[in-house]
Length: 368
Image (cartoon, rainbow, N blue to C red; front, side):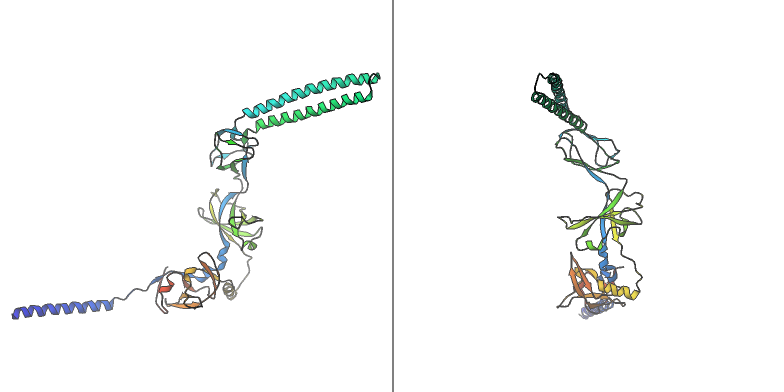
């Protein structure tokens, strides 16, 4: 009996020791500060809207079509094929066009015969008129017949030439060196005159095409300097605005702008992705003036960065001691998941995710 009491006492002591050690362990382990995603206000300047995504295009892009209609019997190129001036790209069935040319030749022969008859009659009646055997009115009639026959002969010659030209139009040839970027007709398809069948892009002069929203088109001028970077090529290259579309696209409501590169990089190819930064007029601003200009311009933040419990919008700013504090801002405009705000310094580190889980003065960790 005494032995059982001793065993129970020992077990109770061990349990008390475990509880004590467990409590001490919990007190020693402190939770890690929350990890937050941040963005420096200066890097979110509204001037970042001056960077646009573009695509490498050819300055001269030709939508090619046959000048006559018919059935395509041969297609000699593929998308991406490089061609030279004079190469035959597609061929139409020439039989119908050949028959039209033959019909024109027959019309010329008929008109020539009528002209010969009218000429002979005019010569005969001119002789009779000189002998005073016929009146002037009769001679005028045969003169009119000759003039009409001559005009008909000239018309037949023109129609015959048109038919022979159409026979040559059954071959679609390249007008310049370039590459085929699009084909919209296949062998066996019947096409009409003027219907686009392929697109030829001249590769001797490439440029960048970007689209500017209508609320920023006034910031772009012809010959404005720009900086171009490519996703697939290293380095930054200088360019300038060559052309601005006079009217916005009816669907996207953006203006097409073409950027020329005086010294294009080696390896630049059609369809490559480029980023175009519109340059502004340089001026020597002091740091104080630059900060004031940034405050006046505002900065663009994700919409999730705004913390608002009442009427005044605020953002969480990470201080030098890694704690967060609320800072009031003035919202000017909303965009697609973005907001333009004023009241932040360029060096302010703004929390842009998870703002509703933070507390004033709370210590946080930032992403490097």
